[in-house]
Length: 265
Ligand code: NI
Image 1 (tube, protein in one colour):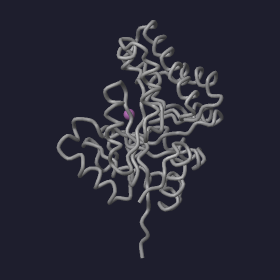
Image 2: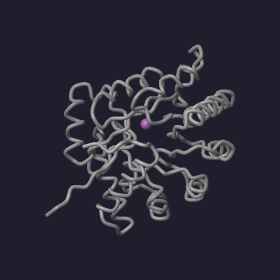
Image 3: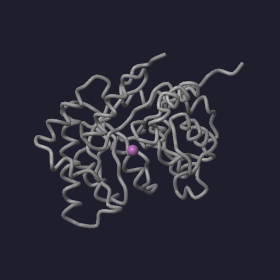
Image 4: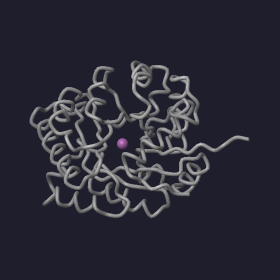
């Protein structure tokens, strides 16, 4: 008899327009695949509110915060930190995120400094409210690490969709932060990721989809959805020569420990 494995999709964006026509079916498909809990993240005030609204569904939780590419929303909002803190205290909000640094499109040094400032301010909110953080970091490895080394005390969190080096992953683990693993692990050109996933203690890994983006093989190029997080877990099992059951069990426990999400049906 086959026992059912349970998974948590620890990072997605089900409020995206790509889910307008079939959001309920997508959530039901996730449940059928054993993905009983899903955490949706906002990136500005609007999407943070969207993520909160989605928690009306059983098993859905939210993260709220300002993404580094959305800092204008922060700058143009009066009392922005108070407003984020207010949202963060709503029912079923389990994280501040996604927050962080993204230098991929941002080449201006003043704007990059603003990203850093707003990132640090949101880390402060998380510390004050005793919430974990979900960190987005792209092409900003050095500065992100520098900030985390200064700020990580009394903070817990995850480097979502980790894209750094093996060395960086070790630094991140030393700070007690987890590594978030997504669809790119399943890609043929996954570069250094497999090595990192093999070297990281299983207790420090979270699985996530970042739906609707980054669909794993064999769905690559299509719209991603939480049910597909199982493909990420399968790839981790294969790389580490461990059972899918074990990967499901430990990554679910990791998500429960970090985000304090209650076990539901
Ligand atoms: Ni995301």
